Length: 176
Ligand code: FES
Image 1 (cartoon, rainbow, N blue to C red):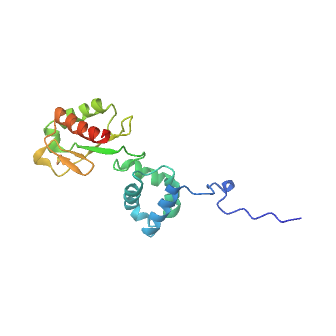
Image 2: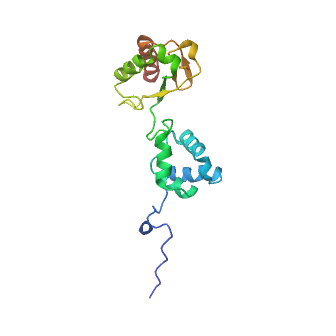
């Protein structure tokens, strides 16, 4: 009678997926690049987000194992820092500054307008996947507040009307 093949050590019966997803593979590679050091967790999240556009939830246990941390520790850090997206971003990321100088120039009103105009809350993505809006704290453009950044491009003195014009320009580009 033929012998049964030994079960691989990461088989489903032992709590791990047999075939890691591309995101899990990417997370392992990023951790390895950082020497699997727990002290590099923030850098690991930054690199992973840079590579994948966000930090998928499926990567958290992988990171925890690689860094010898608990899942709760890794999850806690990811959710504490709003910079780390938990879902894929839209085609364009619109960052609205909410730091002091921009606050004094009406950024709260601008944020409310942006949420209404794009029909998604801060941190959310429009239904068509075109825009993600995020709050940030200082874009280094305080003299021209309220400041907004779309992808890598900075805009100053943005009021509701200007915001709509900026968004419309990106939408038009996408339609062409
Ligand atoms: S406070 Fe908004 S750009 Fe500095």
